[in-house]
Image 1 (cartoon, rainbow, N blue to C red):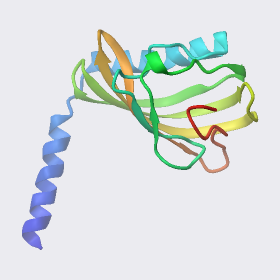
Image 2 (spheres, rainbow, N blue to C red; image 1 turned 135 degrees about the vertical axis):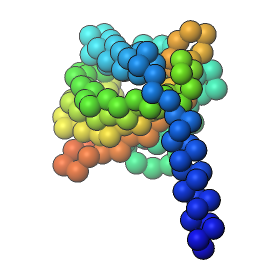
Image 3 (cartoon, helix red, strand yellow; image 1 turned 90 degrees about the vertical axis):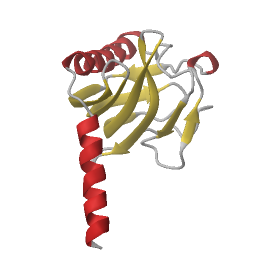
Amino acid sequence: MKRMLLTVTGLMLLCMSAAQADPATEAAIKKHIMDDNAYTTKELKTRGGQVSAEGSSEFWSSGGLLHEVPPDDEAEVEEFDAFSIKPKHIHVITLVPGKVAVAMYYSEGLIDRKNSAAVPNYRTRATQVFVKEDGKWKVRAAHWSPITGGAGTTQTSVEN
């Protein structure tokens, strides 16, 4: 038992030391998240070019099973009647400087997708894995979960 505990502790320390602080990557990811939300708020649609060429594995705030989001060239742009989401307290962990990072933050506001029920009290915790492809940050995986007292989306599939 003691040997297993030492092995697990050693692996955890190795993983933690592999993640390097990289101010440039952290700033780029934070800017990417803020710019993406600002674009959607202004244009009332998502901008293309956000999902990895490999697609993205995601748990959505609506609950349910794991979703496989297709690469951008296969995905439709989402449109909104209203969108005023604010990302807050963004924390970025750089896994490979300039190439791979994980962002964790809160996302709060109003989301009203076309042809879906509005969520006036959208409040979630977000975790997104970003990879750099062709010089741009893309989402490779994500997990969104509602905060107590808030609500997630009503979207239950990529097709909705």
